[in-house]
Image: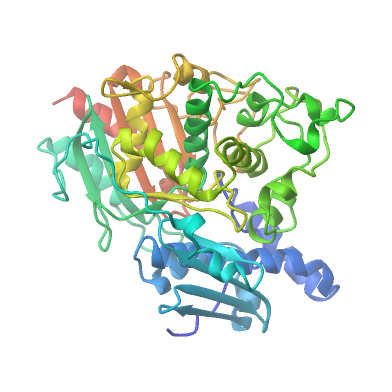
Length: 484
């Protein structure tokens, strides 16, 4: 593999959506710190190195994409990359299914692939073998439940010319960077795929990274445990380190974690210096790091978006199911993915067996759409109840004065903007819509009044591929169906 020339040193996006001005800040920080303390640079450069190793590994060995293209589309456009372009070395070992990144011969990170669990960052020599252990790789077969609209891999071409035009618009590319890079669009209406399209090299079974759409999957796993009586969202979060009643974190509930109102000091600025970045790309035990965070505000009083809340939820899920990665995989397949007809899914883990339920699940575009269909249908998969009665309404209910629910974004106007300057809602889509949303333009838009699910996946660095683009796509689809 040829040398990869550059990598983002700071301002790594680890979930959610990003604000472009962080790029300018990142450049200023790099210039300032390169003249000063190497110690201060350690964390952001490790974050950058880890981001490259992990996401190129997932792209190459889970999605089956060209690692050079993953680098060019996902890593290289992110942030102040020019300043250290000649210092980066990245090696993809196809035999060992491992990616190694260094910066100036230092800041080495590795990510290794394991069957069924995707890629995880290596922090100790023994971690290289974890991906092949029985705990991670107990076989989990495909669902016996037939997927909705089982067309095989034949792509559904819409007969509606206006719908075709909507897809044309979604896949239109800019002549120069920043690019939109739409990878897949799937439209489901009344339980059936009525339109889909894929970029070259992407197919109906290609698993694509959802980034923070994974938080919505964590919402579903929590919901199933609630239905089974194993968890209660109103109770204190079952985290051993917080059980002393004198500890103010004892008052944090599962609901607070789902709604991003825990008040924990797990700030997510996507600068590389922030604790959320460190948690994901530097720490071996993500949840162990997150549970040590001190309180910044009383639970339920302030909203602050952070992957940390969902990493803690991920540990709660793991522990409620037996404490092993294999327990989580088997549960998710049996209780969620199988019944929903999702057969091309990879949920990724850290080396302690905790799923990265904040930002690291890959699935085919159809399977992301089938996940949305579960919520469109009130938590039912066919005649089988997956989510508790009222869970969908709970998930889409407003948190404080924000456009966030409990693991989903809601289409409500709110004061100010969501993180990174993104508008809270989609102004051209019906108000009853709610959506899962992830970094670089991942969206599942659920519109109950239209019996509609619209999925858009890509690697976007321009607003036309972010929430504004998803708003336009969903609006175009609705307009086309009305005129059909």
